Image (cartoon, rainbow, N blue to C red; front, side):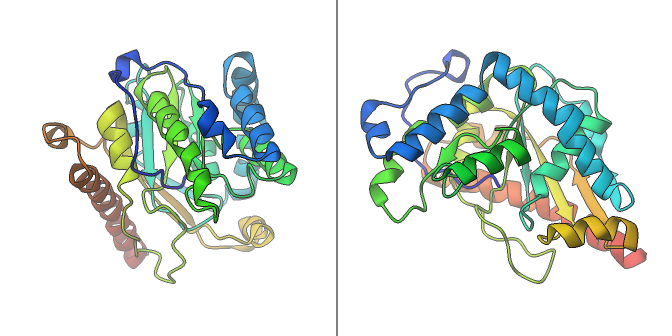
Length: 292
């Protein structure tokens, strides 16, 4: 769900100085009335008392129904890597992307198997989720408004990509500071439709840009066994569907990249390194499946 931001960010602040941003008038001007309303509504739901309310709902309602739909199939490895991460610093989870439900399932596991404080953010393509009231409703019932911030980079109207400058600043802020912030992101930028569950698409450099600026903790995640057919997925929990395997790796050391210049090449190297770590977890899953 988390889709790749563009490669432009404009801030003269260090990560520790970043505060909540608002889009400029020029950035907002490229959105139509429905898109602006969807943005303002979702942004409000991701701050203060509203954010605490929706996090409570995620923990006690959302995670429960996902658990009930998957508990017979769920296998989790390395969850201690998430539990042991610093709770005071943002944690960026970078995962492969094959199902609409990847990060929703991961979030349920985090809520039910760790004790850490959490505020979830899933950067998302704006198309549908911000371009119609139906999309707003899906964001509420599936993500409890956590599909934020939005990116318009793949909209047909190129002018709307101007808004992505704001979203990239906002994503960097979320990744730079905030107790319990957990950000779910797919470096591939879109779902991989290849039949091979271990194939990975090339990483997009936008996430490298964010990481270079924000310096969050980063943990790789590999997810296998989830499908896109929701009724079939739920029925499989009682009819013997494919096992779901979620692998959480160790925190990725990116210090060698932070010593390099802040440029596109460095950002792409960071993104490629993330995919390598995700691929290593995929290799563990392949080995496990091969033995079973």
